Length: 338
Ligand code: ISE
Image: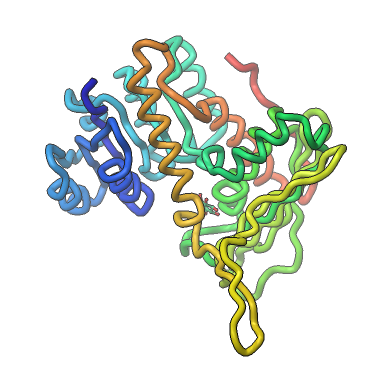
């Protein structure tokens, strides 16, 4: 079987990472087209990859005869149009979060894909492919902790880009804990509340950071999340699940503990999410490539979070943003799943 030819749309930090990963670490695939609104960036990247061309218009890239599948790492605001084009051309697509920038357009994408009767859209919630999250999921599904009741999460970034505002902490950071909750517990989130403790004086003017999110699942499980994106320290993502018969925690960064003179001990903390989840991204993309290559036989062109998962996460985050304004818990109302 020949290599899957992928168009990568958007070659900023994430897109360029994906180009490098597909080119050097993923088997059965190659990058045939790159596109970015900064044309020179795409041209430079394409020049360094055999049989790859830069295309100025993302819709031409999607339509290309030399494109079997698409990886969207473009800005969220461009996703709706690009996803619709992928569906129109029946091209499988891996879409970095968000699916789209609002709940109604996300639902529209879910419906359009359902009308085609084919799973073509995978959403890039990479934590589901991380070894520690996979082990935790297996532990919970195996029933050793009994019924999970509570989850405590920590989500700390050393810093965030200058355009980050209070609502992006919900839509860009909390969204991962939303997906982790739905993934680990296998149920929808019914309500979310955002609490605003005293703000970090080091946070940019007007940005509410840290924030505490409290979520309740449909069956009544409790999830709390500390979101703190301007710690100035390093990247820390921890998850602890408490069940009827015990608890389990991941994300402790306990690689090597070193003891040295004068009487200190310690290790290192991962600097950022690209390092922390580097292997998860590799696994995610390899499994997606394998699923797309086998799609004609199985009728399934994804192996991971679906468009519905993207829509459900958007709905929870929209409720979170509403709570950020009111301070009160906000119910999440999901549409009927098509
Ligand atoms: C960023 O966009 C990510 O997706 C990271 O995984 C997350 O930890 C970070 O908070 C986001 O800003």
